[in-house]
Image (cartoon, rainbow, N blue to C red; front, side, top):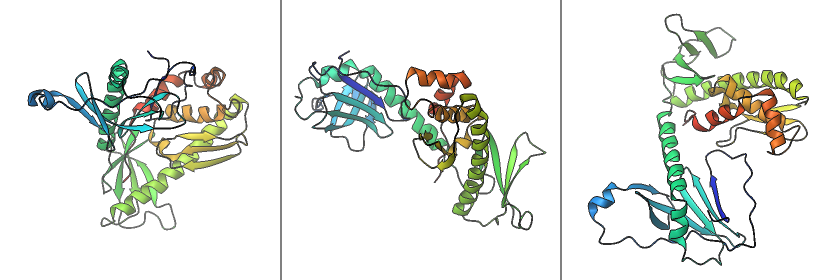
Length: 302
């Protein structure tokens, strides 16, 4: 592998440091692919898998796949970079790098690129399958278990909460009863469920912060709920913690990993081996839980 090829996967922010770059080496750029052959048999074209970035300006064939990718140049870059995200492959390179080694560079890492593109496509399909239809009887995940949402045309109890979780007597699951009429708009149902989930998330997060902080010998001072799409949490040296309320969809051990992760930053503000040892001291199986957080699809809120 060429020492100056750089690869990232933009699905979940990687916490692992990238390898240092030797600036004395000559950078190799991802270059434009050769034009599609007009004489390629139609059957062959139809047999190829296809990955197309919406802003693609170059295309190449990698194994049994056609990959149309976005190619960008940056004056401050000293290496090439591969980035595989929800939209597809993005390749970045310095302005001064020539285009003659494109095929060699792409082919060298074709297996990695195709694997990441495939994983991204599969994850997108799971996300689409997780689209919630906001209506009476819909199901949402809560702490890793399905909860059915039911509407009630009259308030549950005057002055009480507008959403109440019940254990379903006739099923193995639970129901969330909302004080909303049957004719409630999808947006009303969605907003009511979100308010309830955020309340549950805050309560859960505070309990787990208080559980892990003494074990890590740190003190958290403030909790804020985040609505970020790609980041699950953050921590500041002043003891402020931000956690994504959507974590409440996951099982408790996964939530515990994120909570312990952010609290560990109050001791080690980087992702060095010492940091991961700190996380491991309270969550020994953090690596498996971290993988679950990356791989499991959360519901799509629309």
